[in-house]
Length: 213
Ligand code: G3P
Image 1: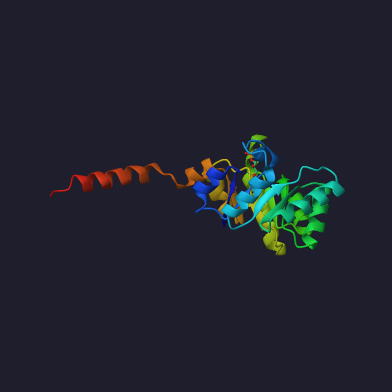
Image 2: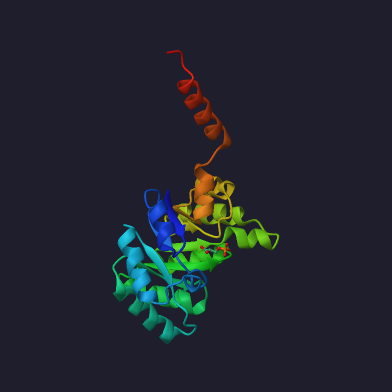
């Protein structure tokens, strides 16, 4: 399973670069960065990581979205064009993927959207776990359903669990067979922290310091 970092902050990416295989961004994440030179920022992110960097289109209609996706893809070979999982985004994915451009179909909230993303050549589909949980549905069930359907038909699209709010989401997405989990720096930090590890290190080091000499 790959781990992507869900941020556009260069310090955060630098801090966690040893753990991650790629980066995901969205317009909200990019709008929060200090640098307003977005092209430059995206290129710097590509330099920091080896894998895909998802960058989302903001156009809403087919022609504009296709052009924007093609322009984003030209920026750097690691860029994966993030498209909304709707009529236009799915069609644009079909066109871009036929040209060998990687796509990530985002804002996926149903298994049928994920089936269509796979049919349209998406490299990744991003089901949003946390936002489904927020409205009283079960985000992890959706991950399980999509993984099962993709396995059944040998679809090549990668399941990228997104809107991940905690380490339980990470574990359960992994058990379901998600290919990628994208996490915020906070969730990634929580994934490596354990109180018993902290207490154990303190105990070992104290015992060493107080050893008989
Ligand atoms: O990867 C998608 C993610 O950025 C959305 O997360 O927490 O805004 O639902 P959230």
